[in-house]
Length: 280
Image (cartoon, rainbow, N blue to C red; front, side, top):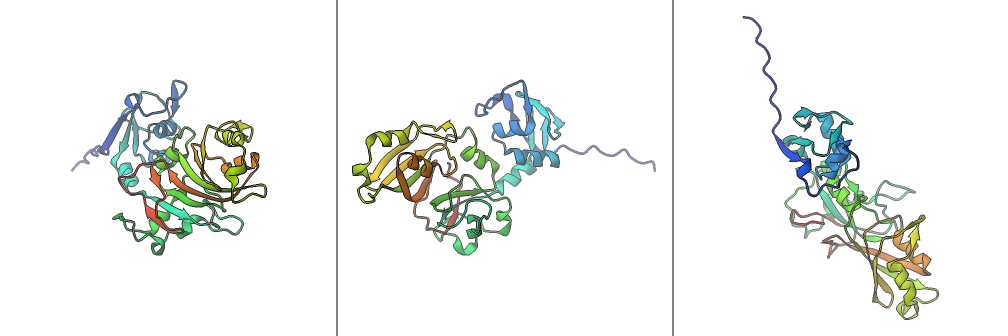
C-alpha cells in the first residue's frame, strides 16, 4: 500500500490577544518592537518567559509560528498556546517576613538568601491557601524588590514574571510602605521634637540619589522616634541614604505593605502564599 501523506499537525489551542485592543499595554516607541518586549508590555509574561515560550513553539504572530528576536508591529495579533497558560497557573508567589541577617537575593558575604526559609516547617499555620508545598516551587523563585540585610518585613518571592514587572518594572506605580525608627544626633527618644520641619519636607520631595532626583514620597511621623515612608521606587538602600542626607540615622527599618498587600500578623521568619483574591 502506498505511503499516505502525513496528516498536518493541528495547531495548539490558544488564547488570542490583540495588541491593538489592549488598553493596559504601555506604548512602545517606533513602528515595531521585539516580540518578547511587546508580550511583556501586554502583561502576558516577562521577557524571559516570552523567550522560553517562543523557543517551545507556544507563540504565534498573525497566525505564524514566532521566532526568537522577531520584530512585531504594535497591532500584531499574538497567540499564546494553552500550555503556556497552564505553566503560568502553576507559578507561585510567596510572601515572607524577612528577618535581619538574610539577604533578599543571592547569598553574599556568608549571609544566606531569604529563600532558604521557604520550607514546610516555616509556613505560617494561618496560611489558608489550598496550595501544597513542593520543591519545584523553589525553581526560579526570585525577589520582586529587595530589603537590605539589616531590614525586616514584607518580601515578595515569585516565579511569575508578570508579578515582578508589576512590582519593580521601570513604570511601576505600586506603593511600598515602611516603618523607620531613627535617631538625630544624640537624640533617640524625642526625635520628632528636635528634627527641623524643613528637613522632613525634604524627605518628601527634593532629594537626589546617584545623580537623579527622587520621586515624591509621603513621609510622616508615627511617633516621637518613628517615621512612616511611602515610596513608589526602590533604589539601593534608598531610605537609609535619604535619612543620612538630612542628618537622621536609621536604627530600624520594617516594610509593612506592598500595594494592597499587608504584612499583617505574619511572624518573622515565616511565609505564606499570595492568596488568589489578593492583588498588589
